[in-house]
Length: 358
Image (tube, rainbow, N blue to C red; front, side, top):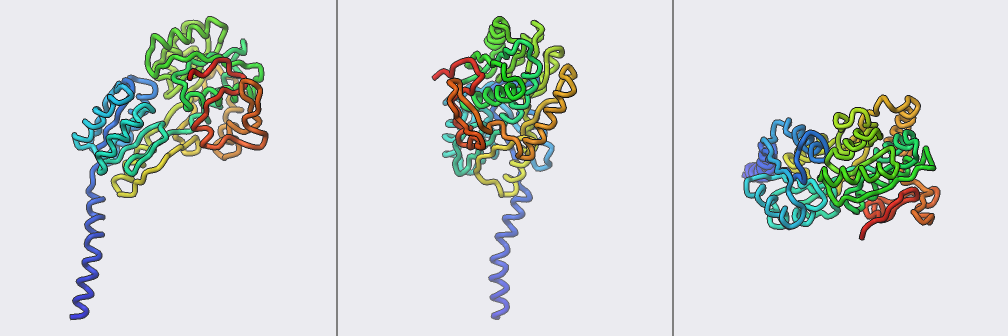
């Protein structure tokens, strides 16, 4: 009887574990994505959608849902809620302005995992994720600094948030590391995707003598402006060379597929936990698009060497000494900006011409 009782107790302990394992093995992932712009064939949203498709190759991932051109802010909460009501158990919200709406919906739906891109808030069932895009931004700045003849580079900037400011600064530091005479002129568009406004901004920079342009938007308008007027251009988000075959030099690009696949696997296995993910070139979350043949071989070799140094942790784009626009030291020699300082960056480095709107 004693042996029987012990066996029965052992089974009672084991059966819930077996049941939990079986549930994890059988669990299906139904993912939903909220996009700030149209998918199109290039850009920020396109890069996310390529990642979504890669995630869908997993056998346990059901056909996913995506909703394009969702306005940022409170209105997005309605769209996110709609995905939850349709049975999605993993929801990706892919723009900074969805952060608070994501948290609001998540508080009311604890059985759903939410992942917000580019924000800084988390909750029990909300994680956030982004990439150290400043690494390939720095490398693209090296290319631009070597290719400009006017020493004037134009930067078509989106919104004055730390992500964009950090990118401008990294790009400028890269350019001035090989060409200290470079000035990077910034024009703000207050857009993520508005071809008309962005084209006007690009043209305004070309009008004041910029012979290389860079950008932080989803539309290819900046590339098209450079192509039309015989300038060079650094793209962004995805490899947009088809829009400017003669002007395109390279682009810092996103590679979301491996991360989306990893997150889906963790949710299925029950090992997902809320965290802030900030991967870089070492994790291949961010990359530099193949460099144009218009760029000399020695510049390509230099970028290759700097890329290896970044991946090995031997080069940090924000290593001191760094000065701000007023010539004041912001990072001393032998130091680097901390992650917290990078995530809250609110000043321009020396070499940037422009102001940051409040």
